[in-house]
Length: 99
Image 1 (cartoon, helix red, strand yellow):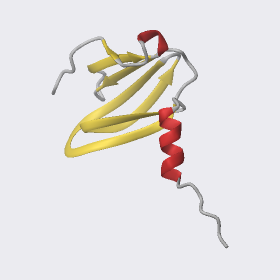
Image 2 (image 1 turned 45 degrees about the vertical axis):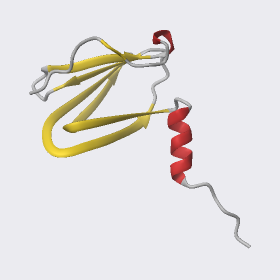
Image 3 (image 1 turned 90 degrees about the vertical axis):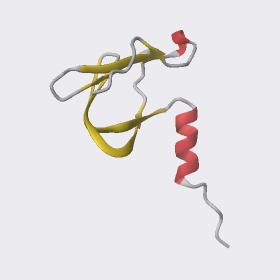
């Protein structure tokens, strides 16, 4: 008899909930490039009117992570920080700007 296996979705949900993975959803934007340097993750995105894109990646080993969203020409759209020093919830450092 075959033993049931946990689905990959359950493992992924566990990784996201334990902090091993980060999941970011882009609404009306498309990811062009993801750059990681020090404790900053820079998302180079361009407008896209087709809905949303989910991005899932391993969480960098840092207590605090800074997410910066920019256009291909380097214009900052928004930024926020995340980490235990911030009570475990994202802290925005500005109002998202629409293009």
